[in-house]
Image (cartoon, rainbow, N blue to C red; front, side):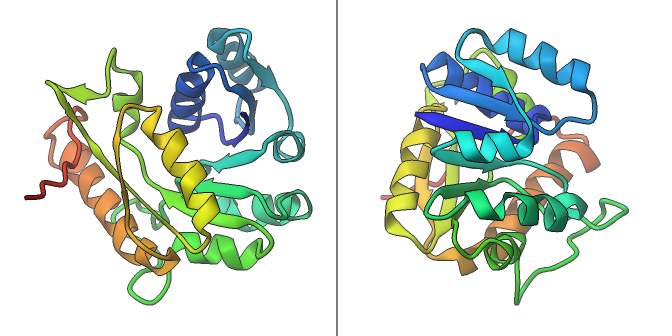
Length: 211
């Protein structure tokens, strides 16, 4: 599968590199440092290439959006003409400027705003492990897979998302339609606060237990 990565930071590069190891073709784009981006592509091996965000959106059968919240309006509007009918996976958390809380919530979410900006795309929110977990030798905790929740309005796009997320060695859980992002984004923020703000450490994840 061809996957365009918009935002080759820790999360975008981590997920893209793991998918490249599975044999997917990855187009990495959008980094503050072109030299860093080229090095990331080289590290990902023969299944990866360097491109612009627009080229990544054109290239990808699926597109992953892993950029900072303030960059969303400009970047998504640039990508919109190339996103019709494609699954658009978003890992964007709408942090405020101080990184102490979320800019939006309760009645709206980053994922819903992205869907508003690119209505032709099939937006699926999927918030992964903390970035460090993507670079560990394994995503497993002992023998347990962490739970990765995802949500969206288009069933076929969610099926694609679930397939790709399971290839990251995670337990996937469909959390419903895109309004569930209002719940998932604060949950991801809580995990970050525990790991960084309270010093628990980044080797943590969520696990859904069911009888």
